[in-house]
Amino acid sequence: MWYFLIKQAAVDRAQFQALQKRTSLTEVELFNEPYENWYIFSVEKEAYASFMNHLDSNGIPYELTADRPNREEMLAGMR
Image 1 (cartoon, one colour):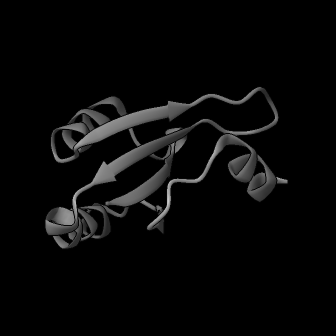
Image 2 (tube, rainbow, N blue to C red):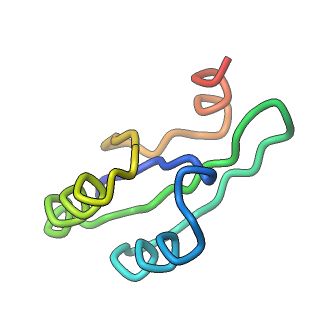
């Protein structure tokens, strides 16, 4: 499983819905200001390349990890 982390502000509603259809699981990590909210898209290994190509071709910035970060790790990365 691969985890694509995308800032909520980086995608519009239509892009978000399209991405949801391509993933196994979609989660939202909500943070208080001044931090940004994140989408976490879980993608099976077989769909990894096509999902990444879709993001790249649509200019959607992302972070990629093989291990799902917990809330504290995400918060530490924004500080």
